[in-house]
Image (cartoon, rainbow, N blue to C red; front, side, top):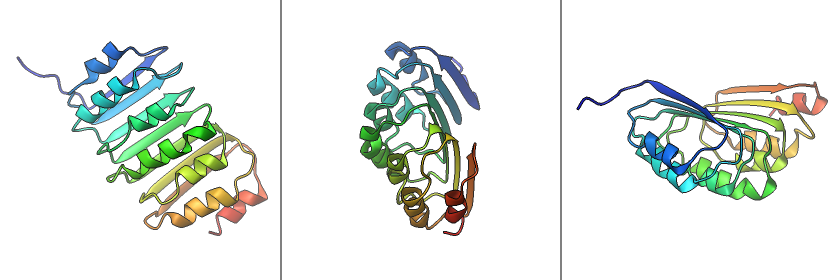
Length: 177
């Protein structure tokens, strides 16, 4: 039996079942893009499927609702690039996201797109060893102290891209970091 080899796979669903995550198990793909319109369920199955993707270099996930178990499913992946697109980032998920991001030892590029910025999100990024960071924020409240502290902690970063809907003097202050 000949195995299927794809460079990338893109999946867009309302709800993902445990069976759907199992179909990903062991695929020989370099890139995976998931768009899940509702809450991500069956995260243990997702975690098992993701950890079985040994060739995976780039992972992109778009979710409306985040959960700590979703972030736990990212833990220890050998990816070089991670893209997170979130409608809502809930404060109680900061620790889980932070631990999972810090466990991505090979990650060089991080892209985050959120509808609303959150100091807790910026704190979750603190201490990452990434080379490139891209932030896109639809609605900003206060891009100051917590983001500034995270940016200062990125000792390996050589590329920073920030996109916001409205200009802000506090944003220009971040560029002086």
